Structure formats: C-alpha cells, structure tokens
Amino acid sequence: MGLDKNFLVLNGDILTDLPFRDFIKTHLDKNSPATVAAFRRSVNVDFGVITADDNKIIKYQEKPTYGYLVSMGIYAFNRDIIDYIPEKKYDFPQLVNDLIKRRKNPTVFEYDGRWFDIGRPADWEQADRIFQRKSGIFL
Image 1 (cartoon, one colour):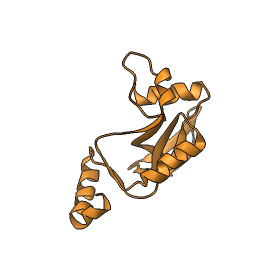
Image 2 (cartoon, one colour):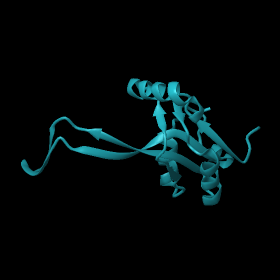
Image 3 (cartoon, one colour):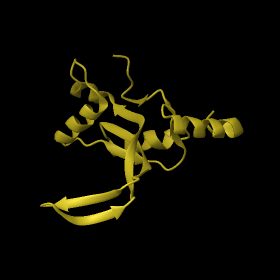
C-alpha cells in the first residue's frame, strides 16, 4: 500500500484556511488513529421548543439557538486505520463509531477560523464574496 504512516483525507466541497501544519502536528502528538477537524456551528429554531415528560411541559424555550461541534470534512489518519475498515460499503460515521466502541476514540482539532461547506448554497455565496475580495486567504 502506498500510503504514508499518517495521511490526510479531505472532502472535496470545502474551503478553509485551516492551519494544516498545526492540524497534523496535533494528530501526531496525540498518537491517534484518526483526528477530525471540527467547527462550531449554530442552528436557529424558528419555533418554541417544548421538552415534555409524562405529557407535562417541563421546559419551554422560545426560538432557541443550539450550538454544535461539526466535522469540517478534514481528517488525519494513521495508516493502521485501514485494519478497521471492512471490504464493503462503509462510511466515516461508521468508522468513528466503531473506533469509539473499540476505545480508540478519534482526536478532535477544534478550529474557529474560516471554513465553508461550499456544497451548501449559503456557504458558497459567503465564500465567493470573501474569495472575490481576498483570494490569497485560501490560495
């Protein structure tokens, strides 16, 4: 197999200024089977959210905003990760969950710079505006 001991995998529909040197250094320092670049995103809910127990409202939040740590589609892997991947259709969430079950939890590299999932129209438009003004950020 022609893979280096550690290697990067990236989704093809992202635009970012992630410091890859810091990312891979974290992966190597943690001696992790996998490292996932992660970004904080917020989701606004346009409704009142009800939490109920036994048909009684125990909490009511009007139009809350929830924050999540999401995968950026950027991964560092140790070549040994191949041993965990079966020869059938298998996706990244399955791999992460299988690693967690085996107590080989992937490392998280949280990043708060620029990251756009340009497969999403809103991200594409925002990235395009920035790229038109400051293309050097990404090149």
